[in-house]
Amino acid sequence: MKEEINSWIAFPDYDRGVRLYRQYGNDPALIRLFLLSETSFTFSRLTNALQELIKDEPGPEKPRTPKAILDLIRKRSQYHESLFHTHGKEDRHLIAKTILAIGRKLDRYYDDGELPEDQAENESKANAIPENAWELHMMINNNSAYLAKNRKREDKQGEINRRERQSESIEQRLKEMNHGVIS
Image (cartoon, rainbow, N blue to C red; front, side, top):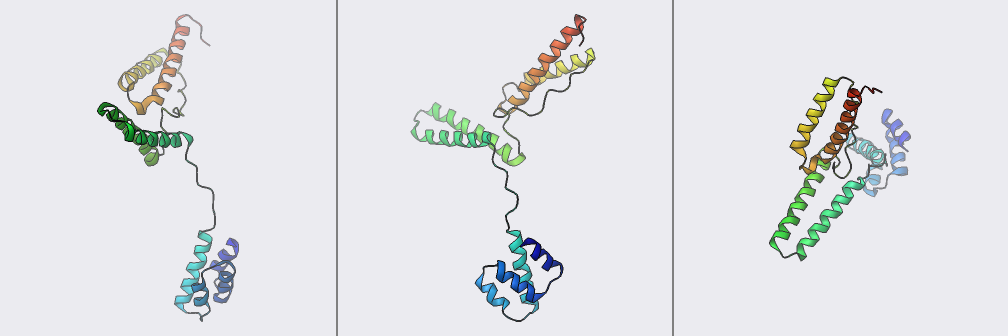
């Protein structure tokens, strides 16, 4: 169907277009309209109708929402439900803060396509560890500062885990360098 309509768009002929629309289209009002003789109005409507037919043809499947996001949505819904049955002011406040935190994670996904880092750990691998001792010390200092600054932030947990693993690898590399065991 798509090839026939694209061929018609390349070389339009009103009668052939009407036959194509009768074959593939299903709007009775348009079919009656196309029984009229060719005018600029009927021709433009025919062109639009045929283009709509190939536009609506199923294309590639939309990407599915990741499981981590669906789990967050379910968890947020459960917290919302629990608000109705929780009477303590402090408990309600804690639940509300949790709902807001989950909402921020979901906003980051919907706005930037960023998966929640504490649900699906950051996909970036630890950087290749340099061989130079100076660069190793600089990296471990940078990681220590980052960890101290962001350890309590919920949106940075994936990067925290990655940098902790990287720091362990750097420490191991420095120990090997100090003991003369360079691999």
